[in-house]
Image 1: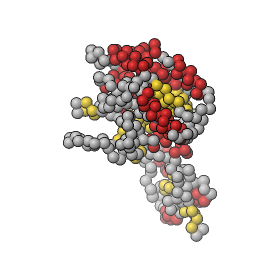
Image 2: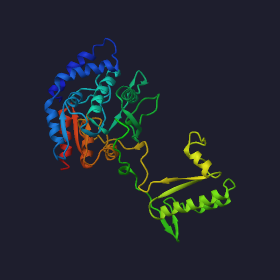
Image 3: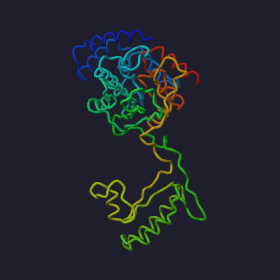
Image 4: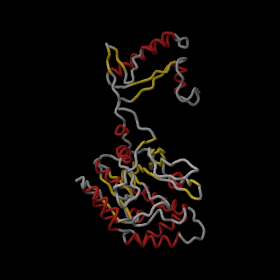
Length: 390
């Protein structure tokens, strides 16, 4: 069931954008959707959010309403992190209606841009926005909706795109098409507002393997003892004698860092022995210049572990025993974004919260959060999911 205010907004917005008299541009649709929301700005939500932000309440706050209208009433720069997955276009009927039911994909993109423009305003300058989007087909053509939205956000709204992540679902849904491959991935985009933003990379590193001492010899996490590098330096015809002496000393210094636990692993690149990483051109590669001038360099591995890559293998949410919401994303999808980009005392926003997965994960990780959705039915389910953790 949709909120009464949301139903009014839908009627107003549909009357503007669903006339069938041609396709409006992103900016035209954005202006009309923004104007449609202005008379309905819910000041009650603003007061509720301001009270929540100034309190010590840890449980998520859920608000029923259309995202643009609710966010439009809130103060600027009040959230540390936002993560969401908007409704698919033209693929599912969600409780409460709203975005995803547009007649054209152009209208769908335009409506999303309005919402994400308001997210930009309410996000702190140090904040991050993580966007998960699925794609859609029209007359056999894969529309590329995630990238259409993303590029418009960068070009028209000033977002900075930091990562494009592939969510590999490992197993896909039923696909009976006989003329294309199965779709088993979706995109996750990481946006920021400025080049100085909160990011705790150590919170999401994988647990590193440890170095060890064997018969008095230090061995790195992957078995590097330095013996092979010593031999390569000794027999090198590409290094001068002063360069060899410098290389031997630098290798001993690195092994001492491993022995002290300041470094878990390393690789040594020696002129004439290993290939330069990235490029051999001294003009474009600092590593190539270092190799030419010094005769060697090191690749050091962080003792706190390695950073995650931009392909995430995560099984979709099991919906067989879930009623109501047909496309919740898995809890594991939210963990790294929240851990990395929301401080422990920060607040997470989800403008399309659905049954509250983002808020549930934020709660389990000790962060406060605000979830917005047009469906009171979904929000009731979200509140119940979080209540069970109390």
